[in-house]
Image (tube, rainbow, N blue to C red; front, top):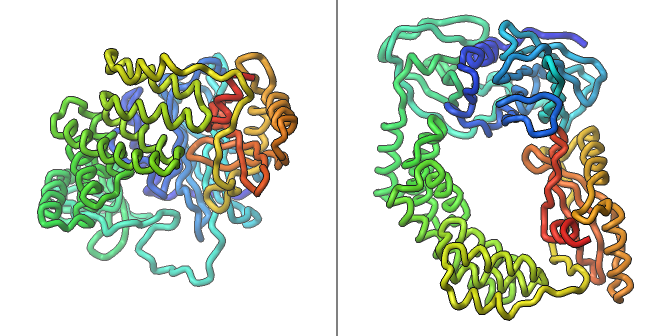
Length: 494
């Protein structure tokens, strides 16, 4: 396979993080989940072959278009001996290079025969006392005959907003394409994204990268614009400005708070809860955040009551859980959460919900009353009803390599009583049939969910209703977590 020179901008990016002190995370100064980069980061898990405080693996760009060049990168908190990359479409191992044993990089030209769809690169990271692997996915788009060669957007990067102004504070140099250019104090650029460097658009429309040390951080100006838009009830503009603040600096708790308040004004409750949760994570003592959390929790509780009234217990459970996540002292939400779970046949989970409520309100008469009356049923597992299962398509698909690994890992797992999962599922299906319920086993399905794979065992009941047993799998650490109530019940009782 033919190697290619790495894009200059990415050389600067990879060289930039090599200068960080050990333990520093790329995410500290950046938004990681942009379309232009696929990143897996975190400490190694107990039982892995190599113990590292932190390891990060990336592929750039995440979406490969016409150019078909990708940059490979790995950074570790401690020095390692070697890093090699192996693709799902080839047996060739690509050796990454490093000057310090911490930051490793290379670039690779995808061969023409690599088809469109999801692919993975598996990094093999070897140290003095063992080795680990990290698997990162990327997506190859089908070549388009109408793709514009004059686009201002770099190949492989999604451009999802108009950017924000960025002022140069000192004369400096920047990279554009394969050349360097001089920037002067006071010059205004348009920022598109920020990692350790800002990606910008120059006056002539070309894109490049400039060090964040040489520009004025725009968070104060962006936050002020967001507040002005919010006060003028221009909520769409306010969302854009507050999002740009957290794009520049994800640690801005106040921006997350006002993003939540803006979503709440738009009645986008789910997004409001997510943004407010991030604000509380950063500063859980802020009184305004706590007050907003109470307001959002009350709305989730009200929605839960509406669903409960019409016996839509799955929706009710989801809303009550959101309510108690934001406001753990909302005792009545725990009461209704338990009632909803019990109505779904999940008696043990109902008791757990009521017990959790007692941690915050140990004198609650209602919670004690429900726990006193409830008895755990000794009958067969009653699966929770789920909707139709859709196979992963496009970017949510999972490569055959990862799918096979994920399924093998699940099949090798055992329940708390030592039963292999495959045998436990067969036993549950057989028992359900013996009780008179028509069930047809549909087999295994695998799809992607973030960095993990979802492995499902699907059954069809009478009338076409589908039931699933779901597990979340990390193929690198071989970690398996039950992904729905059916799987949790199976793991704990069979």
